[in-house]
Length: 242
Image (tube, rainbow, N blue to C red; front, top):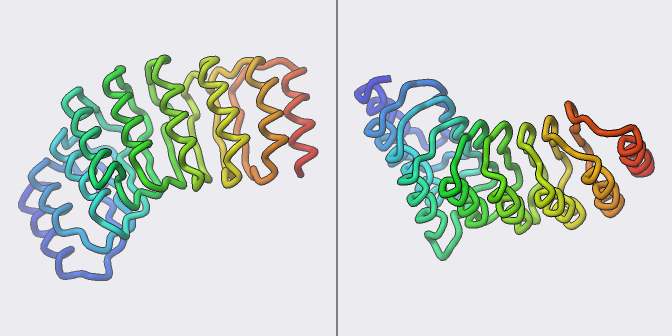
């Protein structure tokens, strides 16, 4: 979409008070056009801008919208590139409004490849959001040292009911944070850890967390290689909780 087309769309959005969902996937949005749309959003509940390469200014506009649109419940940024400059912007937005980005309930930022500084920005965004119930970071490449801190940031969200970390290699430190997250979050109903290179050490500790959690409805451990003993251990708990 050209900037002129996007500005025309922004004009349509301005006069439509009932529009709650805006999906602009793979539209080749440019920063100027994106800013013209985001600036007029009022009652939006869903923003989906996946597969657009609109740079730091565009991402900043979306993140600012996350903190100002009270009705917003679902933000899908899909796969985009975070730069060090954008990491600073993320931290600034995460610290606005007294340290919370208001009304961010569902956040999908899959397929990321980030360095340590950029991963810290993601951690800040998660910890600075007020109430996340659905979080996806699937198939992301994150430095091992930062992964436990990101999972720890998730633990503050007692509202978290859906977590997808599939495709992220789980280290021993992440194992401990995940175990604590599952054991202490009574609202977690869906957990996806497919292809996370899970080890037997985790699959031995994890059943204890499942024992303390009676509400989990869906558990995806596909494409992990673990021993028969570990599989039996989890199987017993799953059978017990059904």
